Length: 193
Image (cartoon, rainbow, N blue to C red; front, top):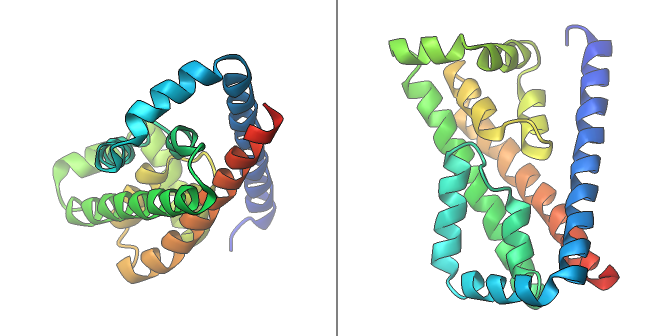
């Protein structure tokens, strides 16, 4: 692995950002439940009654590079029982992994298209493309667990012909575990509100 010190620093930085983001989500959840709990719960009840609608909204969000984080959907369902809540959280992980897989396939199929080459040369794509070419699957794991743009990195992995089978073996369990950690933090944060 080229430039191990950069990689260690980069991984440490992304882990710190993830911890900070999760603490921020927990803090926001505590504040919402403490000061606007009745209003938020009423709003959440309206959305949480239709699993297909919220699942579709999350799917569309993930396809459009994560407009709404999974944690928002977890907050909507946080008043459900433990079993149902964790089943929903696992479902969010599967949906997110599937959307990443779609991005991977799009990158593979658009590899030869002129527009894909124009997109991949954009500043942000180039930055992550360079990282992916140097570190490969490590960047995919970071994207699945940290605030890196998961769909974008999945697209880049496809563009550089990363194995679909290997991608699924890496992403599905890692993404589900990451979202289950978020789910635990969100569910337990209700206690402090």
